[in-house]
Image (cartoon, rainbow, N blue to C red; front, side, top):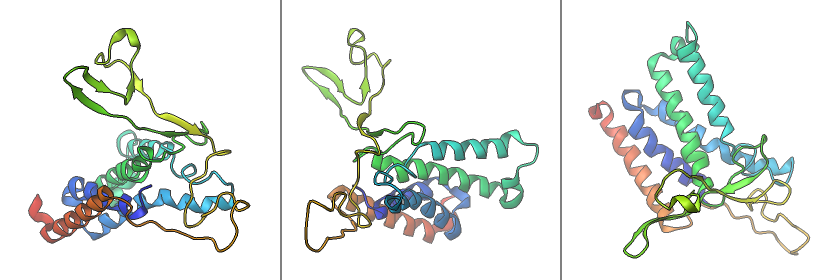
Length: 223
């Protein structure tokens, strides 16, 4: 599973690309901190075993946050966010919401899975698949379910995340909760806190670090 460092590195790329003139150290810290929040539900195991990837890994959180920003900045006669922080604050809020959804939750959604609509729907899902062009089969994709009679390229299907269980029977091992079933093993418990576990994760971390450093050095020169 991606570590918090990998999530934050992707968020750094999003911040550097989308903050525009609002980019500075404070805005960057806000985006990175918001992105790291979902992983705090690892401590939710002290409440119930299936809390990790459920309590704060639900897409309902960024949906509600986006709704709050829309109401405040577009539907109210006077925006509290804009009055206090100006247009810059609105920009940072939107980038933070996007980073939370994409970098904070999305990476886990496409790897080991998240409880995407918890607590409204208690079900862990993982989105996995492929998209390729074959000389014999044509366009092949498994990300979207398409009715058999319409053909694989009709494009009128729906996303097809795979269900992997509920909070009652799904647990993700972390350094906080290294042994979901402590009765199985004896002896010292190894606590592993992942940093980088694959080549693509290392690439994301390096790309994020280099991009953030370059953006911070250039500052307004990118505008």
